[in-house]
Length: 103
Image (cartoon, rainbow, N blue to C red; front, side, top):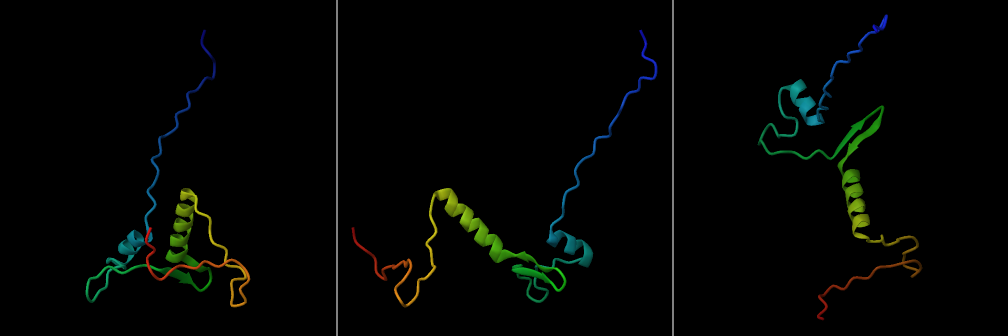
């Protein structure tokens, strides 16, 4: 028995395109590494990218803070509250000794 009008559907295999980092895109555009000092050759740190229309596009401080919070949550630490901690003595305060305590 032959099926009339049967067709085989062939889908091409598409490999995902690798997303380039900011540094790789700038190397391709400028022809040099934007995170290397042109005078001394020392690698620079990228702290923040700010655009006048879109605001902050990248903030290393926020990224580090999020990583630290995730690590604290993973270890089971609870954050210390700082609301109301002032000179009036109200709220939660954390006092640390300035010298080592012997057991």
